[in-house]
Image 1 (cartoon, rainbow, N blue to C red):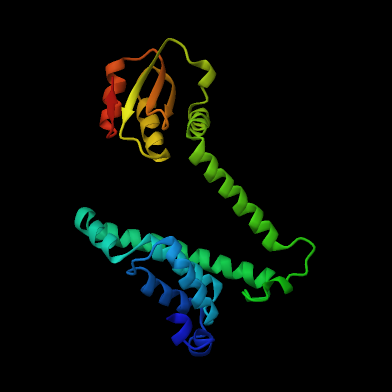
Image 2 (cartoon, helix red, strand yellow; image 1 turned 60 degrees about the vertical axis):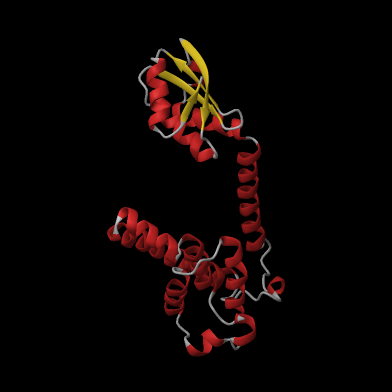
Length: 235
């Protein structure tokens, strides 16, 4: 509908102010219920109608992060003050990121991302597009590594947090942990167990739904820490 009904260069012709464009994206994007995937073609269509890349990026940031249902839920559970802080932080950093993105486009692409002919505007020996593509490829590979090798990722996380993987001494037990569904759960369980006195090493496996704990500690205290974190201990 945007592509069909909105005239070409509408935003450039009638608005012509990048900050005002970002404000419009915020006003329209915050209450809109749209997921990250669905927001991409909307941003693409807006750019075709003259919206700056930075303003389109603002829409991509605030659209999936907020919606009327989320705002209402947060207001009922945490209060209006938290809602104001929540929206303020998202808006502030979205605008800052939008200006940074516009700066990159102005510096490396002459102020415009010509979607149809972008390949003909970059004459530097090392294309910025290639650099950004490599960065995003590395992030994608890291995400896939975390998804398909969660145990290895948990081990690396435990090393970085405690630095004591090779120093574990004393008792070592493994028990099941129910309720873990993602790597964030692994992090919560790991941090909860690490706070128990006497624990020297923790390795939580999302795949096996288990936690291996080493050190001189009280087993009941470890189980209590897991339960306090919101998970069930399976004997």
